[in-house]
Image (cartoon, rainbow, N blue to C red; front, top):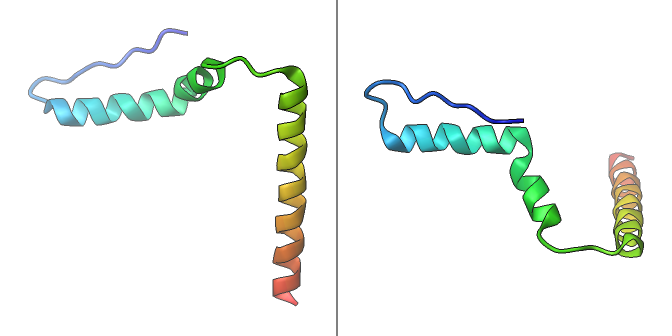
Length: 68
C-alpha cells in the first residue's frame, strides 16, 4: 500500500513533515517496522501476549476495587 501525500504550495516544510509523520503513524507502518526489526521466537511472542493479558486482567481488577 503506497502512501501518498501532496505538499501544498507555500506550505512550510515543518508542517508538511508533521503531516507526513501523522500519516505514517495512522497507517501503522512504523509499528510494523519496529515489530520486524528483530526476530521474535513464537514462544516468546506467546509469552508476551500472555503477560499482556494478565496485566489487563490485573488492571481491571484494580479499577473495580477502586470504584467500590
